[in-house]
Amino acid sequence: MREPFILFIHPQGSNWLSEEIDITRIANIMPPYGLLILSSYLDKKNIKNEIIDLYAYPEKKESLLEKIKDLNPTHIGITSTTSSFFDGYEIAKLVKENFKEIKIIFGGVHPTAIYEKILRNFKEIDYIVIGEGEETIYQLLTSQDLENVKGVAFRKNGDVIFTGRRKLIEDLDTLPFPAYHKLKGFPSKYKLPIFNYPRSPSTTFLTSRGCPYSCSYCDRSVFGPTFRAHSSDYLIEHLRFLKKNYNIRHINIYDDNFLLKKERVIDFCEKILKENLRITFNCIGRSNHLDEEVLKFLKKAGCWMINIGVESGDEELLKPHRTKPEVERIKEIVIKIKENGIRVKGLFMMAIPGETKETIEKTMEFACKNPFDDLNVTKFTPFPGTPIYEKIKDYGDFEEDWSKMNCLNFVFIPKGFTKEELERYYDLFFKKFYGRPKMLINYFSMLWKSPESVYRFVKDFSSFLKARKNLRGSHD
View 1 (cartoon, rainbow, N blue to C red):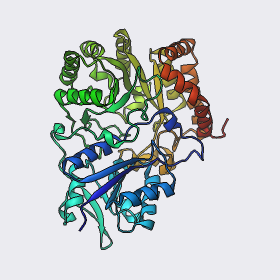
View 2 (view 1 turned 180 degrees about the horizontal axis):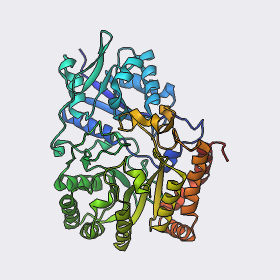
View 3 (view 1 turned 30 degrees about the horizontal axis):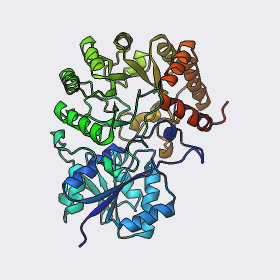
View 4 (view 1 turned 135 degrees about the horizontal axis):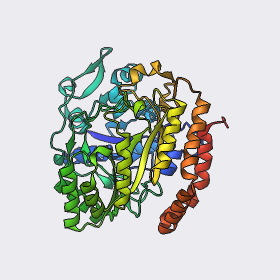
């Protein structure tokens, strides 16, 4: 019997833009962080593995097949979001048509949420890793008795077998650093959006897992509701590793709850200062996790921008969907962030269940009246595994086209709206926010401070407009 060798593949994602350039790839290419952790974990266990990132480097079928033939893996592991599932599945079909002996493993948030539906309908997929994958994938590759491996779903005699949830990793510091060296072109190929970083090279950085909140639109099925975090010492060593090996100068702290524990955040900042790491960073957080003391430490340690979850400027709209909405608190904290010399980006949603024309107008007014430097407006998407998913049709029309479920399409239309009306409001939101003279001055001044942003702005501007026109459709 051959020694196991798994080839991890990060799919490109469904090309729903009909041959136009994918707007998400123009704006942002993130490293497949989860695969990098799995890879390094298996390296530690002496299990051979490689990574192909098709999102960063798309390939034709013939070229991919040639690579698979040359590598000759025993297993292929495909990570999947909802919108990338069908692209991943096409890879699975291609592999099975040409290499029947290779076992196909799927993992990620989408397969975890609806593993039974996937295994019953997509026969090329042999196994699904449920939830946190490090130890599960190792045991799946090495065990002769899968029914005793926790965290796996598979078919047996026509039935779907789920072996039960695996206990979550309590001490995240036991995990090795991500296997960055497995990524072609790292870090230069992987870019944050322009205006979202002051210098490069930059990369994504995760400090914790799990979320104690229960918002209607978030899926916690992979990492669970229990907050677990790396120690500050581990994170500092990780930063040293990135600086030494890849000259990383800016990190984007991507976990939703980096700011959850005040003492941990302050300790992390103090150690960055003590080690004189001279690194800048962005982070995401909720307004109730920030105060004057934390902001001062963040600024001293190099925090360049904070992304604040707002969703809507109407608190009544948010109450059924978000744990402790605090619209008034957000107003106060945005001002404090600015007073401490940190940029602030508002994260908004449109077409939340219960949305009305009045709540959209209120949200646009909220964004424009408060001193946000930037914003992101996602189109509400009821993903499988979220609390809202099973009852979404009570609130409006839902087109469950997985390939379009990436927060860039109005797949859900609340009662009282048409898709065309939502698209017009979406465009109006950006025009109102970015069309103000102070915003135009702000952004053009930033361009000249960052030669790389100037280059990317000029290079990608026409492609961005072309892709965005396709994205809007023909409602204009």
